[in-house]
Structure formats: structure tokens, C-alpha cells
Length: 153
Length: 287
Ligand SMILES: Cc1cc2nc3c(=O)[nH]c(=O)nc-3n(C[C@H](O)[C@H](O)[C@H](O)COP(=O)(O)OP(=O)(O)OC[C@H]3O[C@@H](n4cnc5c(N)ncnc54)[C@H](O)[C@@H]3O)c2cc1C
Ligand code: FES
Ligand code: FES
Image 1 (cartoon, rainbow over the protein chains, first blue to last red):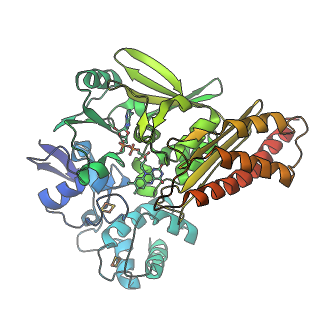
Image 2 (image 1 turned 90 degrees about the horizontal axis):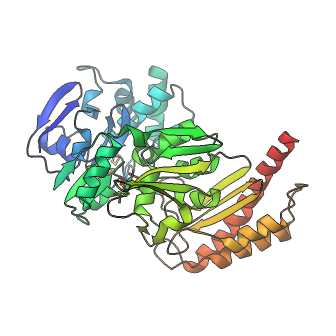
Image 3 (image 1 turned 120 degrees about the vertical axis):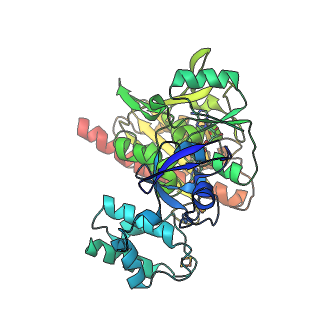
């Protein structure tokens, strides 16, 4: 089937989309946006998190056809040109990135948290990131990054 | 595979009547896992996310009618005050991303014995509304769960809503898992106490979620409803025994049957204390 979807503000089209494939597959394999990562394909790790109509979701669990006519914002859509979003910059500055595989999903989840709760408590940060797994950092630097980003915004 | 995208409920029911093999997909948090891992290859997917009627809730006569497609996040945010028990269960589902997409309708459709909303729906006396081109019917939640991952849906039917009373007393839900997020319940328990009603139900401890009738009867007959005083430990222990006795759990990777039975007793005792405290508070507020 043909899929029409707005991604990071641009109207995009994909052809020959299989009806059972995920939005994550469409983004990575058909639209050339490999920022969102594929680690588990079962909603457990959060590395594929994107905004779907402004609501963060695991794109591996969204059927491609469910995104028809909708707006998707991926990690690639957060920076303004060369200027990183404060959340991205804080991840770099805090050393919250090691292998980086979890980073795109965490950045989107943290970005959404700070949109909703500009000055979150540590409990709120932990709760908001509970669906994102990181196997490298031990999370402390990630928490630091979110706290710093909250201050910077 | 076909991808069917109705925009009204009538259209969806007509499609489902024509294509009973079409698998409904709401939040997709169960369906997509099965597709991604090739556990399921349906002839068609029936997307429910464009049907406005399913994503609404309304309130009248002390009841909430909750559309099958309302996400957990919206349920928690918009109905947390009036449906505290269901909201408690919703808060324990998966992660924020899962709660943003997952729905009570999907939980019912999957009918997993471990689904978190089921014990609350059973304990509060919820009714499940089903529709097809043949008409609508509502079933008591306890008649909806028919076996392990089986429910009373006919091939041409969709779940449209759940009807449940606005809380007037105490409601509690508790679940055992290895961490606070992203866990399938090892076992779970819900209790609802309001005037003239004592509901209690177990999850992940029998082939289906189920009410614990003897324990409910004990509460209804023996709780000091007219002069709500704190409960003796012996009373709570008796309740816990009745709950544990109603479970028929299995050993699996998440826990042994013996552990589940023990843990259910503990959850029953604790949640009874909390729910009774809330009930007493509301009884005092009315006096
Ligand atoms: C990472 C992860 C964590 C999870 N954690 C939990 C948890 O903690 N607790 C828990 O209970 N569940 C959990 N789940 C399971 C799942 O999120 C829930 O069962 C959720 O309620 C499913 O809702 P959905 O809208 O996403 O359903 P979908 O996946 O869209 O559908 C589920 C089933 O219901 C059917 N269906 C959906 N809507 C209707 C309808 N209106 N009429 C008829 N049939 C319908 C579908 O055909 C399908 O069989 C988890 C899932 C994942 C991936
Ligand atoms: S790849 Fe989607 S949650 Fe892991
Ligand atoms: S940095 Fe490697 S998984 Fe998080």
C-alpha cells in the first residue's frame, strides 16, 4: 500500500508498504531516517520512541497504516538546523551517551517530559524514562542530562 | 494482508461482519508484537484508531461509559478521580509509551489472565459493551472472560465500551512484579468497597481473571458497615485465606504457584486495609 505521512514537518510518501509492517520499519528502511533504533520490536526498550501526533509512542508497535495522514516527529526533527535541542546538548555535555543506541529514544522521552513538566522532580524523571532501557550508562548521567536540560530550557 | 481503516463505528461493524478474519488493532501494543514476531499473520488488520466514538467517555447516573479506545494515559489524567481503582491499574501498565497507546478495549480483547485492568473491572462490577451489525449487548465482566486468552466476543463483534460505577467508597489495585515499570503481573488483586457492595478479584492466578466469591461474601456479611471501625488482624487474615484459597495458579517463569498464592494473601490483606480506610473516610465525610 501507499503511505502518506508528515515526518518532521515534511510530507513524505512511501510505496509498497506491507500492511503489517511497523512505523519504525517505514522510518528506517523506507524514508531513510535511521535515528529511531530497532532493538526489541516489542515495546520493551523504548529506543524506537517517536512523537505520533505529539504523543510519544514506540514506533515498533504502531502499524504503518495507523500513521496515514498523521504527524510524526523523530529524533532527527528535534534540532533547529545545526543547533541541537537543549535535551540533545545536555546528553552530550553530561556524558549520557556511551554506545548511543538508547539515546534517540531517551532524548524524545525526555523532550516530551520537559514539555509537560518543565521542572521535574527526580521521581518524575525516573517515571518518564521507565520505558527506555540503557545497557551502558547506569542511568546516572542520563538523569544528570535531563536535570541540566530542564535548567537550560 | 489488507489494512482496513473505517472512520465510524457503523462502518467498522459492517467491515467486521464482512471480514470476520480481520484483526482489530487499537493501540497495537499486543497486536504488533505478534506481527513483528510472526506469531500471527491475519488476512486483514482493522484499524480502530480513527473511530471517534471509541475514543470518548461520558458520565451519567453515577456511571462512566468508557470508550474501548481511550488510552491509559487519558484514563489516568481524565478519570483518575472518579475511577481510582482502574486508574491505579492503568498506572502500572508497561511504560509511558505503552500507556499512551494501550487501551482497556485492547486489554479485554487480549484477555490475558495477567491483564491489569481485569481484576478492577471484576471487582467493581463493570459491564462490557459489545456491538455488531446485529445489535448491541452488554455482559458482566465475569461473563466476558471465558478461558486463557479467550473471551466472549463473536467473530463479527467489537468491544465498544466498558460501563462502570463512579467510585463512592474505597478501591484498590495491587500487583506483584520484579520492578515498578514494564512488568507483567506475577499476580494481582483488586478490591472495591462501597455501600452494599464488596467486590474482590484476582489476576494472573487462574486460567482467567476471576472474582473471589467467598471472600466477597465474607466482606459483605462481616464488615462493620454501620459502625466502620478499624479491622482486627484476625479479620484481615481470614479474608487473605479466603482469597488465597480461590486461586489456582501455575508455576511459570514469573513465579511459582506457591509464591503466587502466598503473595495474593499479602496483597488481599494490605489492600483491604487501605480500601476500608478510604471507605471509612468517605462514610465519615457523609455523616
Ligand atoms: C512493553 C509492553 C508492556 C506491557 N505491559 C502491560 C502491563 O503491565 N499490564 C497489562 O495489562 N498489559 C501490558 N501489556 C499488554 C498491552 O499493552 C495491553 O494488553 C493493552 O491494554 C492492549 O491495548 P491495545 O489498545 O494496545 O491493544 P491492541 O494490541 O490493539 O489489541 C489487543 C487485542 O484486542 C483486540 N482488540 C483491541 N481493541 C478491540 C476492540 N475495540 N474490539 C474488539 N477487539 C479489540 C485486538 O484484536 C487484539 O486481539 C504490555 C505490552 C507491551 C508491549
Ligand atoms: S524497538 Fe520499539 S520498544 Fe524496543
Ligand atoms: S548508551 Fe549504550 S545503551 Fe544506552
